[in-house]
Image (cartoon, rainbow, N blue to C red; front, side):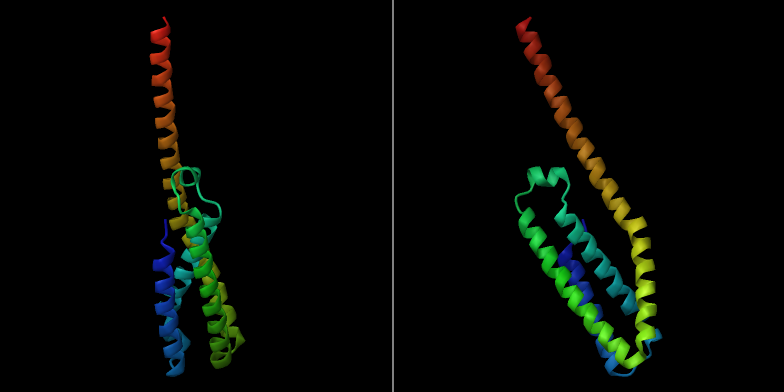
Length: 153
């Protein structure tokens, strides 16, 4: 799964770089890489928060720190939302509201692409793992049942 701690670290680094670039008067087009990194990290945090709210069944059964993960993901998401609002204010102030609207449009396209590629693969892995665990439990139960039947007969 996407690690929320890593994602918030990447978001913070990109955020600080964008702020510094804005303060030094760089053009917004020169900040494309940093804006992309920030949007990617924000998207990862949103995905981690979604997964923490609704963890897969095997995590509910075998993991003991679900609540801690959910609270951690929530806290990181809130911090990212604060960074987003500050970025909106900075970019709208220095480059105008239309620049922020363009960034939001690009960000939504990136989030959609990331969802189709990265998050879908992550969910497929989780489903495969769940099927493997379920199959293993089924086979174990079938063996126990067969042993029980052989002792009875």
